[in-house]
Image 1 (spheres, chains in turn cyan, brown):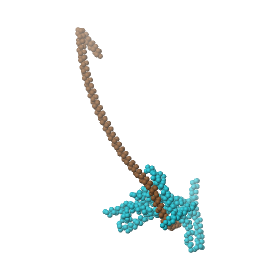
Image 2 (cartoon, rainbow over the protein chains, first blue to last red):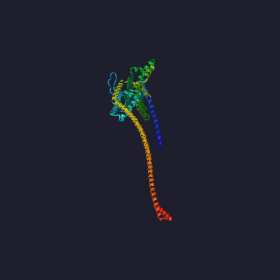
Image 3 (cartoon, rainbow over the protein chains, first blue to last red):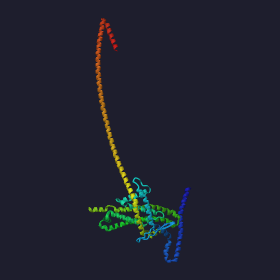
Image 4 (cartoon, rainbow over the protein chains, first blue to last red):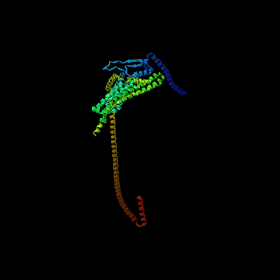
Length: 339
Length: 175
């Protein structure tokens, strides 16, 4: 009997879950045309010339509002909003050399990330300073060591190979910087600095410079220029050289867009899922759709935070490895020519 | 949904912000330099040291294993040698003992033969002496008998009886 009751209750809930939003929508559907018609008639009466503009504004008030709020969360601005409690206006700094360097939300996040990084790694580094090879790391030091060791062995050593130690500090810093940025962006009231194309652009420009400098150091100017020809016959150089040069720039561009788009997309999805319930004005949708799916995407974002930090570091290491590789094809071609 | 379209059209997602680029670069470089000093140096050197330590431990373990195997082999060889040695010693001892026993037996037999021979000699001598004595005795007895026969003179039966009784006497006396 009890089982039957439970099933009946479940079925009842299902029916409610389907019917209630429909009922609510019917209301809004009924209401919406009325509002728009009222607005339209008023427009016709007031300013017939501006009818089109106002119509657009009136027709989609909900969507525009949701979009604005989402954009407000994603984009950079001068206000740190702690929504029910008010907001902090960040100071405007005087422009230097025509550049507006006032502190924005993402700059503050970058600084928070830096502070977190410095605190965590000053603790960890301090532990390692007075550690002999005989005792094992514990707690935080152990957790960080796993990541450091992963970057050191699986990312740097396997992709760069010989001379990877020089690039380790850059790779480790970029990994933890991006990771902490991604994770701090998932905390309420936080903002994802890596979801800003300017930040990711700067980071990938660093990778670009590191790669180019490493290539120059490894091959010298002559070797670097030879690399641009990709070891092809001189008659193909007119095609190969531009392609290789473009290739040098597409790599950091891809890094920029990948990180930025991944971090932005995740946040837009979470916010959009939440706003579905506001747009439909339904608690049922909120409970049945928005919150569970948002939680799922949030957990996915936690994974993506690690994944994207890893991918950025991995690709940086790969590009450095490609640039510095004492591989074959130049020397091989030279050998063939000798024969 | 219109939302996504508006977001895409907003354009400000991709708008450049030189101030943010500047701050990102400055922040990142400072963090990189500080972390390189306070964290990556100690951590990486500790990791490398530990890696080397583990490698050397493994090397040492291998070396110790090789050494112990060598020692084990040597021990086995020594043991085999000692076994052979002890076998040899036992065999030699056995041989010696056999020889000794054979020698002793021979000697003992020779001794016994010698003793038997000397005993026979002695017995022979004794016998001869006894026979001599007996002969003398018999001669004496014969003389005494003859004396008695002569004394009793004529009675041959008597003489015979006398001689018989004397012989009887002798035999009983001897017994």
